Image (cartoon, rainbow, N blue to C red; front, side, top):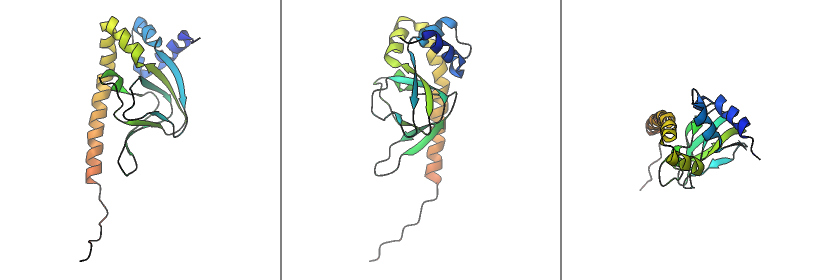
Length: 164
């Protein structure tokens, strides 16, 4: 049996839950579990169902974009205290990138189906979650745009022209 009180305390200690109403915290904790990932483990893969979001308690997670015939591009590296995985909020609820553990990562994993059901029943809960996610989403989009500019302006190796 899951210890909701322990999860509630762990959730309350995360920056995501700062100043959160205790009733909201309790409701969210009911959809929460602890998870551990090891270096190189994928927390999720692009195209898979977005069935959770994550609060990092310890470790680093790389958000990656798949590149055909190439190494993935790390768009952002996230650390303790950060949240990620907002694809669960928007239909069709599929991941738009990969998330990989850089080292041992401890997270609170929040079940998306459970949360969406609770948000439908309690619109104030939905508002509270969106209010906390939207600034993160806006910051990530701005960071992604800057990363694209960096990649586009990196010097590229000069290739020899074919003779003939």
